Amino acid sequence: MENKNSNIIAAVAYILFFIPLVVDSNSEFGKFHANQGLVLLLLGIAVSVVGSIIPFLGWFIIAPIGGLLVLVLAIVGIINALNGEQKELPIIGGIKLLK
Image (cartoon, rainbow, N blue to C red):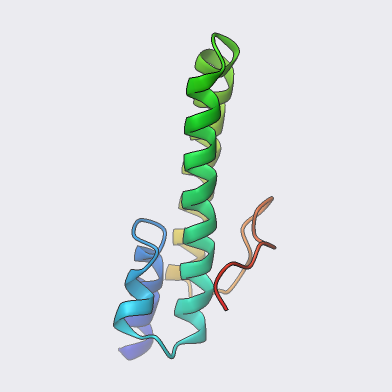
């Protein structure tokens, strides 16, 4: 049962990245998914900023496609966490911000 709870907590990292760090700071599994969630959050912020600054191209291409990419990556991360897998997300998974 504890493994199932840690999977759920790791899945929440893709919504609020810091939750696994607060709940179980010693878990490498939680730290991995918290890092992935943080990188995904920063990607979402970057897409939003760039998409809103650049007229037309940003509004109609960068923001919608980037937002869809962030959503798909979040779903992939949540599925990986719920399955107990420690797979890196495509494109951004190699970035390590949390040690």
